[in-house]
Image (cartoon, rainbow, N blue to C red; front, side, top):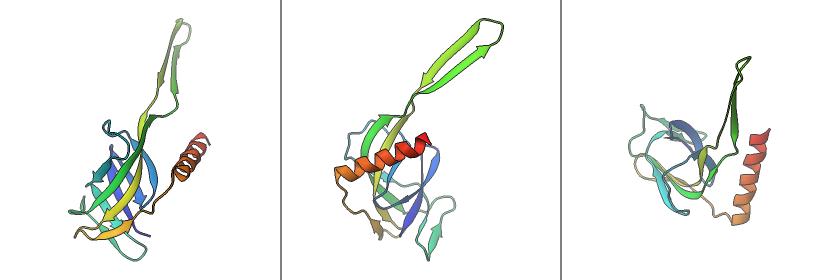
Length: 135
């Protein structure tokens, strides 16, 4: 099973083909748009691995935007005792769900390609992510 480590939104993600991940929100694109990640830090499989310094030139990962959305509200409550001072704020972080389609090596050859999933399977993965986040 081939994988790649990409960098986007100031964070690094280990991705595999046909995987759906939640990342920091990209530009306001429409769903089903093709996205390319050229900042590939490493790629490989169980036997071999190619590591960049810091990036692997020529390697790229193609993905498809599934959905843009907002996370649940995080409440920020600040209080100074005996001063009658309180401040309550909320924040909803924006995110993008993307599906990894293809992983290319530095010479342009195809390492991994995604299988086609139905909408039902996408919703199942979204539910799994929310259950894991709640725990």
